[in-house]
Image 1 (cartoon, rainbow, N blue to C red):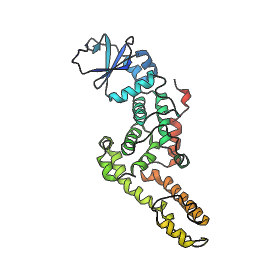
Image 2: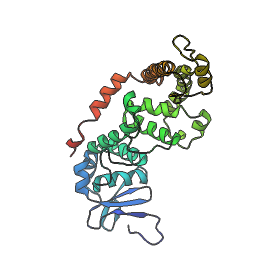
Image 3: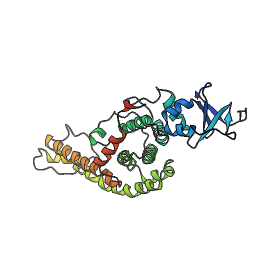
Image 4: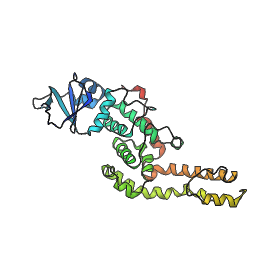
Length: 297
């Protein structure tokens, strides 16, 4: 088989090496790479490529063609991570969520463990298992654009068995309006069990969240040095806002204390809300998967 001018197949220039001996096809996209390098990185490809070739196999320019049932975008990210050492570096290097989920999905599928660990390390910067880490902004190695990215993360984490990512991802998702969730582009791609979890847990999370906010309405009259001023100022807000200089030191301290306790309680309950194991179990699962990145092949 050769590629004519009218052929819809497209090569990826940065992943087309003329001297290499294997062509991969994903959808209508072609990649020419080293069979030996791919086999060294992936046990699945090593086994796949060990079978003797037959005369009926597809060839392009004399190279065997292996068709992959993955998206061209995911395969592009995956192969770039293998053949370009600077493309997908470990945290704190920056990347994007599409690259993380694409590489995670295929490194899990094709058993490239060092890339799987690296992708999970990146996800962990944006979907932590610790409230203390969650409250520290700026640690993320990628930007999340909200609803579709939360759905994409849930889909991928569930697919690869990274259950510890799910509580925070569901938490982010359930802050969106349910109508927006159901109409989101990524919703239809979610597994039915994860769609059910989202719908059932949505109300549970909404009911669990209000106790985080009533500190704004608690009348701290005993010990308060200016009840009228403090009550009037807090009543003007429906969400947390800086009170320093606006209310007395006593009310500020009590409000912050109540807010911390309520946030901690909600955080501790997140896994149960989504039908997942407790945080300590999820932490152990994470530790088993996130072995030292430097031990990769």
